Length: 496
Image 1 (tube, rainbow, N blue to C red):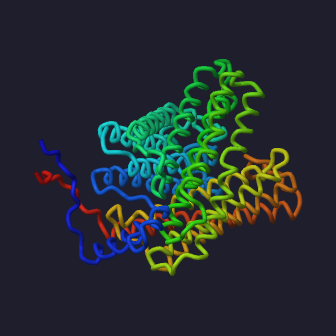
Image 2: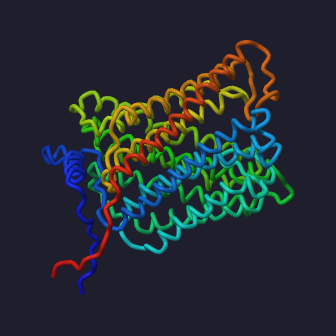
Image 3: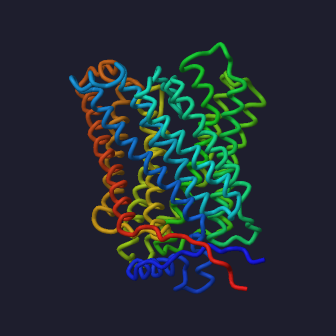
């Protein structure tokens, strides 16, 4: 009995020609087979997995839009007169909680869902759609919670929360969706063998990121069963999210490394890094995540030793792989052929990503004490991951059925966003030298000198520019979606 095959309908002549030219370039059809095998590009399926990937992309974009709206509310909460119109007196921290969760947690998981959906084998479609539905409904509940009785904002590391039932229900639903996503990704992971080429190395990296995600989910569940019931507020949530939050950093780092290689390959760069060595780098980036279960087995979740081992593993993990891959990408880009206009936005995102992640990593070396140098470090690293994922979105839009982002705005957007964030973290490092404390705002910062004021002023200006850059990304993507609507998918019987 013949099984149905999903076939895309015909698109417009211009978009079809554009996609064909891009696909030929990205698959290495214009170079010898030996060179194409080492090109770090990943074939994109042409079946119903595209619709699933588009669903996760839409969730990620919705999270960025919501995050941008809450960033505006952050400003309103500090504006005399306007702050009286907001639901709670402490709306600044309420809005900050939702802003952070949407712009980091939901955005990263949604983009991981897009990439894992494209990489996985077809099958388990009900599980795949259930994961997306749970994650989407959970995101909506978290975004609505501030207006339905926010509860108390808890600025815990990795996943800040509101203590309201609506927010916590949304977070649980989102976590369940993420759990189904990771389970389905691992269950439907493609078989890779041992003869790795460029695409095989990228698939290995995506699978490794899913393994790190599974370890993170296990850590969250383990902490939930072990955290002392006598703890309340920040102490409770800090311990609850500490182990899983550290493990999640391995997932984001691996996704970023995959994005760097994929985008470099999409630019036609031939990297001085063989696929087998790349697989070794991914393995090294993943290895330290397995210190997580050791920390849970060896020490109580509230112990200093437990926290110290997880912190040490996070600092070690990814380090041996990041620098070699970044250098290989930069060397490869220097010898890459001239780029078509469609490739310039994702090259800009790639270079900006390496710059910001490098700046964040360098700042981490000089952290001493609990001051704003700590958020400068992780802001740089998080933005490095975000820019890499933005670049992959630009790259994948044509093969997802949309138009390719082009024009000055698309090329400038990564640099605007990256420059704003670089100003933001430089301001934080500057202020950290004066001992300005983290997680405080307004009068609580106690800015005594002109240097402290200048540093925090630079931080604020950079943050405002970065918000504009983030919103411009949404504008560029929505324009591309509007210019080339996705081709409808329909089923036809396969030929006998």
